[in-house]
Amino acid sequence: MVSGDSKAAKSGVTQINVESEPELEILSEAARRTGVTARVSLRINPDVDARTHEKISTGRKENKFGIDLGRVVAAYARAEALEGLEPDGLAVHIGSQLTDVEPFERAFKTVAYLVGTLRAAGHTVKRLDLGGGLGIAYDEGPGPSLADYARVVRETVGHLDCALTFEPGRSLVGNAGVLLTRVILVKEGASRRFVITDAAMNDLKRPALYGAWHVFAPVTQPPPDAVAAPVDIVGPVCETGDTFATERPLTPVITGDLLAICSAGAYGAVMASTYNARLLVPEVLVDGARFAVVRPRQTYDEMLAQDVIPDWLGETAKRGD
Image (cartoon, rainbow, N blue to C red; front, side):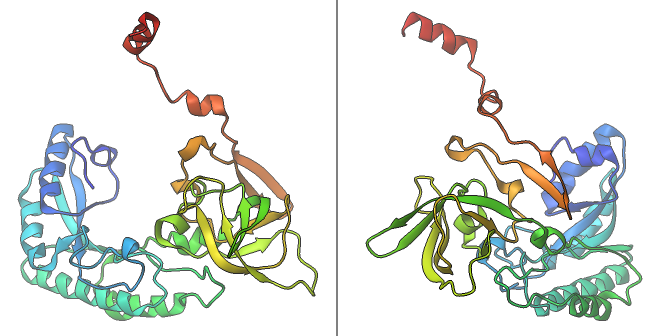
């Protein structure tokens, strides 16, 4: 979303994707104040169900994202009329973690139709941002085919002579990262066995947020005859939502064992927090036998230093008010 003091407008980025008509007015004012011309693409809402989790679906008409199809031509014309704006493209993003390319095909066909409509009305459309959303295989099943995705792009918008932008994010880095955690203890409940780890919902929010699936792999390979049994893998935070997996088959583990939570390279560290006064974990980059700490472990002093006690509160405490 565009802010009133748009740093993007000042920095001269290649394009700014605008989500709504009111944002055009805001961005125009920011561009006018800074004396720049902002190149914009209108993000459309194609009303396509990506068939992904409802909290990461962004392309349906009831979602908050994008400009409704019936308003695109008028919004494009308005952008051309506003000072400091240069509209020259469209953008679309229908959701995350798509494992089927068919929703992409429907969305991109809508984009192609709008390009033709805009050009017929005399508008210039030179670039398309097709967003991201291509999923990965979190549960060891087959992931979407990059070749199939490329085919859909070629068949739907390849003839439009537009520069194309893609945002593949997760599909590039998701499986490149793991969250390493240690087993604190194994607890025998009345009806469940719980494996309690030192990682928690603040370190990897996705399972608590929308039930995301991650593979759990013991760092030390179990013996060939080890029998997997269902366990709940949970963190130590006082929240029932602090659960990574329920009734997940796992070979026996004991206190001190290390587990790798796989596919944490996307939306792992970037969504982490210090909730429950838990420190942010270090990030380690590994390349074969080489490794480097690229973000050191946070200390309590560093975390507490983010809080500032105002002078007036200190004076109140001294008086005993």
